[in-house]
Length: 76
Image (cartoon, rainbow, N blue to C red; front, side, top):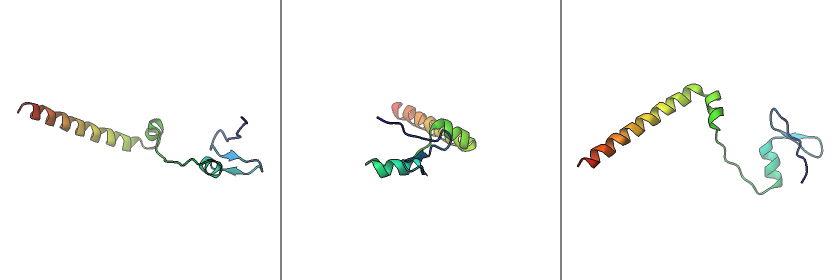
């Protein structure tokens, strides 16, 4: 097991030749891994606070609608 020199800020990795590359590129070149991207919830709040509030409001409305629908179907 060795050390992997990674930038504490941008997360680029320094290779054996001293060149810096993106984390994804470094891993893709050396492994069979593949990536899928998403946003960690705290990062989403930091980057898109208005969007997250909107999505949470929409989710609440859908949940309320589904709950009302469940109550109506049980009363039949």
